[in-house]
Length: 212
Image (cartoon, rainbow, N blue to C red; front, side, top):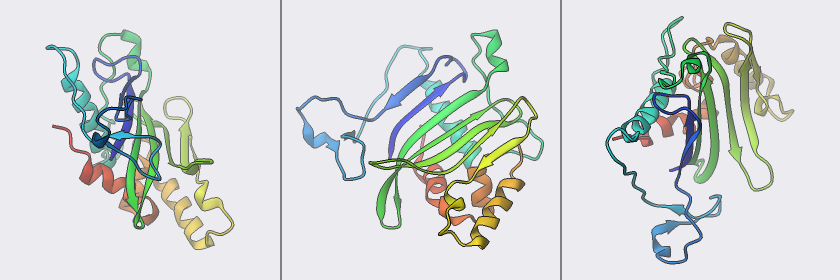
C-alpha cells in the first residue's frame, strides 16, 4: 500500500510536491479509512486527483512510472538515468531529482512500513536509503551518498554491520554494494544479486505500484 510519496525537480515539478494517503481528522465516514498496528495513522483506501488541462496530473503518473522503471528495470552500464529535470527553471538541470516513498509492505507474514528515498542526476545516483519505520526508532537497512558528479560512492550497510549478522552475509552485502554502478540503484542491484532481505520492497515496486 502506498502511504505517501514526494518528488522534486522532475518534469514540470520543481519544489517538492507530496501525495499523501493519510486521512484527515474528519470523524465522518470512518469505514472508508484503514487502520492497523503498523500504520502511522489512519490511511485512505482510495483517493482521486483532479485538475484542469496542463495542471500536472499526467506528470504525477510519469513520476511513478519513472521510479518503478529505475527500481525494476534499472539502467544500462554507463548509460543515463533517464531522469528529466524541471523544464521551467534552467538551473534545475544541474540539480538532482529526488523521490521519496513511504509504503506498507507484507513481510514475513506481517505488514511493515518502509521509507525509500533516492535522488539522481542525469548520470548517477547521488542519494539512496531504505529504512523500516518503527514506533520507537527507524531501522536503517542501508544508505548511500556520493560527492560531485562522478565522485566516490559511499555506502553505509547498517543492518548488515550488526554483530548478530553472520560474516558471510555481511561480506556478500558489501560485495553487492561494491558492484553497484554509479548509475544503478542499490535496491535493483540487490534484487539482481538475490539479496533476499530487500526483496519485499522491490516486489512492491514491481507488482503493486500501478500508474494509470
